[in-house]
Structures are given as structure tokens and as C-alpha cells.
Length: 193
Image (cartoon, rainbow, N blue to C red; front, side, top):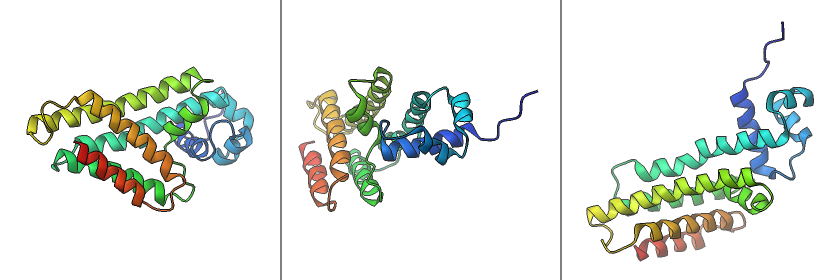
């Protein structure tokens, strides 16, 4: 009879996600993962198959937890559409600037690192981007119905602009000295609505 697992797979994926998010896929070594998860290499490979398999699980976990936080903020609450949008974008800026490692967004980082070389990672990132863009589009359509946004505005086009603004903010935050430039960007985008 085999020994019972000495680790919680969900906790292990969370810990691995933190390593991949900080270092990127290419710079994360199996030893980094062994150290973070507190398990031997053999156990790591037995549990997750490969470094890439663990990375895929980590990226999915990121989408289910971290990336979901923005879509939840956009779709919940009693604030106006523009206020929810402002709060969501400012929250990202604040979180990114408060992070001592300045990790930015794991999905954006993965797109920059692996987009051409890794179809699975690209598919996962496209899914996260599509979910975020869909939340932006639903928010804009809500604003059109409430009269807060002009009815002739194309919600899909604005959603694409908002997604690309978000990606730009997440990259900028990795090197920014402070939030001023990013807040100007957020105000400018909101003024366009």
C-alpha cells in the first residue's frame, strides 16, 4: 500500500504560482520549486508530471484567484459603472506598486515570455484576457443601459481599449517610481467614456 500524500496539492500549486510569478517560467528551476514546496524532485515530478505541468496548474490557479478579483470588482457593488472601473484600475496600480517584487500580472508576464513558444500557456493567457475583456464589455453595456455611457459607443471596442490599458498599467507598474502617471492614464481613459 502506497504512502499517503504528505502535501496538499492546492497549497503546492499556490506556492509554485508564487515562484513562477516572481521569476517567470524560464528562470524558475526545479530546485526553486523543490525549495518552495518542501518536497523532493521525485515527489514533485510524480505529483505534477513536469515543471511545465506545474506551471500550467499555477497559471490556471492565477486566473481563478488573482485575475478573477478584477472581474469580481467590476461586476459587483452598487457604485456607478465609471466608479467601479476607476476602483478596479486603481486597485491594480496600488497592488502592483505595493508588491516589493514588482511582479506585475502573471498573465501579462507569461504573454511576454512565452507567447510564441508555448501554445498551452498562450491559450490560458488568451482565456484570462478574454474573461477580463468580457467583464469590461458587460460593464460598458451596463453603463449604456443606465445612461452613464453614450448609447452610440461600441462596447466591444471600449472593452478592448480597457484591456490594453490594463495590460499597459501592469507593465508600467513594474518600473514606475509612483502612481501619478498611471492615475493620469486612468483619468484619461474614464474621460473618453
